[in-house]
Image (cartoon, rainbow, N blue to C red; front, side, top):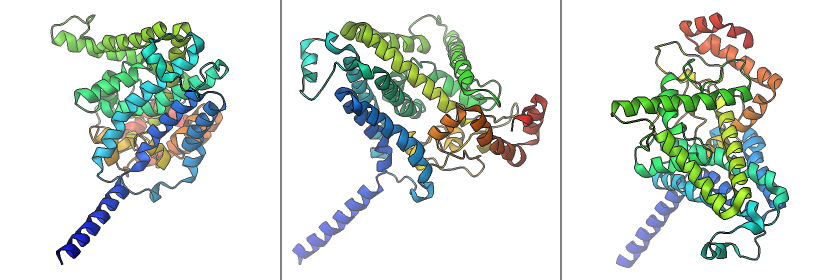
Length: 394
């Protein structure tokens, strides 16, 4: 009898373990799986780079359009998996950077022999520079879609490891203003003219990228000067987080220059430019055309939500953007759709594609903005829209 009971207990434990495994939100591993695939693609070179690019953009684009968000269950309480998944991103991205710099340098790679022996496997081909533009696009896409979104999640955490990981991921794109500007300015002034990360109605997406990048650096520096003055410290010291972040970016490029020469530097700068641009293209669609009256509290209707399963998996639930602005410290897997939030009609990648083509963007977002003006905007917000003549841009 005791033996029978032990078997029953073992069976119950097995079922419980199976249920636990089924509750793990494996879809959140999609980003790191794609980074790992990109590492293999760049290391191998040739046609595999194009396959990895196609896989990322087809998954985030057409596939996202045909899947139903309602078929994806709410994220369970597998905190260990979700947290581990976030911290795996930095080492994977750094490995991707290594193989990309190695790919770009080819035979001119000159790291110490102890490191160089790691890449002497016979199936790796390092001399195929003809695919450099595709590799730069692939690596930059990984920076923006996966690295930056994980950094965004970790920016809202208080631990030293989280903040270091966030800054390291963003330093690859020279986006050292983000951890300062995003928390102290964007979340405070979102959907107002004081927030340079809120795209205005009728503003072309590439013009927005230039304006917001310049504005974010300017605002981050202002915030650091004010913080350091309050601490009675000089702004042009290593205590300035914007400047120390820039030093991280410079150090990464210096290491690449030492080991891979000019091609290594070119590789990092190209990927950084691609990554930062894509990152700001995504920022463009998150609050496009929305307004908030001065002094009004941030509400659910001041951010565009996106109910697409692949977008939420790839971007750490960033498309559930409205609740993130209401509860910034809430872990991404606990975010839920907000009833007050306006909805984007397509997934993130498709919306970015439409935004690059003005007539498609106006046709797509015009009805959405008209609905927002009529159904969700407050009287004060409608007055702002009328005063600026933005009602004609719907």
